[in-house]
Image (cartoon, rainbow, N blue to C red):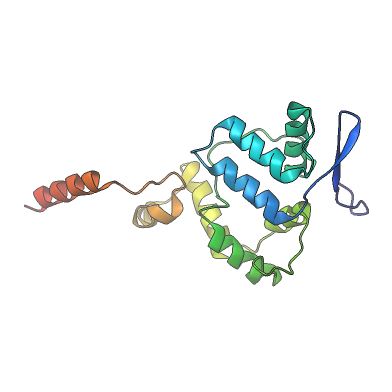
Length: 186
């Protein structure tokens, strides 16, 4: 992208131009669908195309490729480099706060109109002073095995917040943990 280019609002698929819902809210719903483990891959793709294109192209495979290209801001697909360091679903409150703190942009305000590519540019430049950015850095260090002893302790104390794969234990598991801890304490 060049600074003089307008953000795209259409995609060429099968020789025909299709309008794209470029609003960041639409794209965030797509990202949340891809984070939803209950959905099958095809369902995630259907959500993506159904939300992104007001008129879904007949060539579903080409539509998916164009949708991913749009969601990736026109950049070539990046090699997936490991564990995620953020979740649009789990980190929503912190992302909201980071946008407000860094740019004064209220993402919940219905008057906020951001093209997805503008949102992504801003997202990648959030202030390092925000809680969200600190969480991302912390997760990245954890994923690469670079936490200090003190940081590992902080991770253990805040695993529900920091570990994107964390699932709270069910009642039976909690009961077993409590029994085990009682045995340890004597």
